[in-house]
Image (cartoon, rainbow, N blue to C red; front, side, top):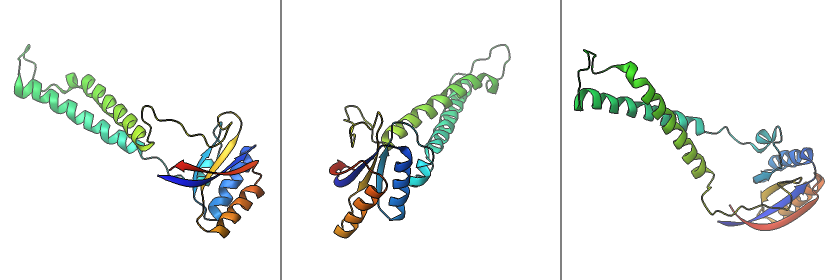
Length: 174
């Protein structure tokens, strides 16, 4: 979906953080923020919730564990029971290595898949960088362009007051 956005670039991280806080207070929709390094407090300023990826990992890991235990039980007890030295067919200690490996495998693969699906990353996707230098030394905030003309002018003034080096408008896939 193509949408009009306002892009403001900042020379310092503190100016960016201040702009994000003020934009959210003014009820402007902050689409994304670009920084060349992690900025402490930016997640809270943007209102980003904690990720749900650990839940995906837990559920997939438990699925892998149940699959491993069930398949080994089926293979050793029901399908092909072999009496080796009087050992019982259902030896749980012998199931531990395979169960652990499949737990880790299912959890890891599901986490990677969920991450790639959630972030819409796929092969041959072209990156969109809102301004030159956002990977080097420039900080940028991308705000969805407000529909009202008065609100739009207020948003531009707010970004300029916060110390924006440049404010531009563009179209982006949101």
